[in-house]
Length: 399
Image 1 (cartoon, rainbow, N blue to C red):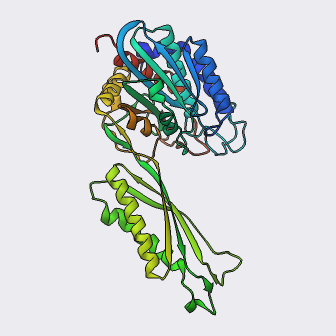
Image 2 (cartoon, rainbow, N blue to C red):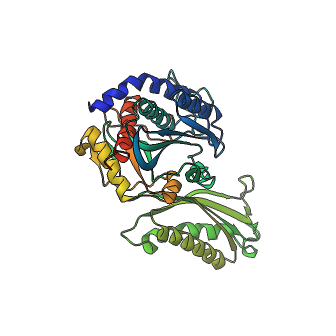
Image 3 (tube, rainbow, N blue to C red):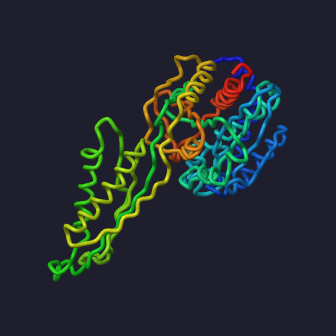
């Protein structure tokens, strides 16, 4: 681990961050239900002397800290609060006490790091103007970031820029990854229902319109969206997640309805539009070919996370100062995961960075959203130091 003086200084808050992280980990709460977590966050922030507002997007918390130096800028730093519906592997002394729920994405660590940074900055407010610490609910699929923006987050707490950070298993401890432009993918879900008459699969198949045939051809046809409709220099994914139709107890019955669901990922608004239009067209075409009809629902969930050049450069500078430029990848490959911090970046300029969560000596690791995953306590001080350095860089008197 890098021995930058700021990282060493944050060591004074390491025990507190670990305690907070473990307490949140023991008591996971899923999206828009983070009442205990939000109360803990608000309590700590008030102990640090910050102005605290609760109840934004139901369980969101925002705290404001004014620096002692003059300045005309304000920035937002964002962490997420929610857990997932996953059963954690047993054996951890701070393991989840709630069956079927766990912090499988590291939001407990994200919250602890931002609280550590808030505590340090409250004791060392040697920066200009304002920092807003944003603790967002419901990142995992429910769009808490969107709801905060819609409820006037940046009207109540104006910022010139907003920043996010996420841990990444498989990236070494002490390393950071980021990029300018499309970093994480848009995450969309879709559902297509094929309707036919159904019928007897043995005695009356010739009298039925069979939606299972339309589904079979549709699954093959959608593979052409990426291979033949998306330009080769672009990236997209279209995948099937479920197929539902008929009853296993009646294998001789052709169902009258078959529903298929899936996900679509893309990195630009134009490709996102293309995926929706081609998937819709193919569904109707395949249905018509077999005398059926199709009903298409395309749900645009999270937009692509698109960072801004100026703020990405500031993120790189802050991380490089802490760990050295050789350990910061400033043009990392895009990631097909998604993040609803993208809604905040649609509203304000900003940056987003990945902090390495490490791996085992043999190179293996448990990825996020798996029962064996755990946030690495060894990166708490580095992550908090990154936030502090970012504030010092963005809100320096000379800037």
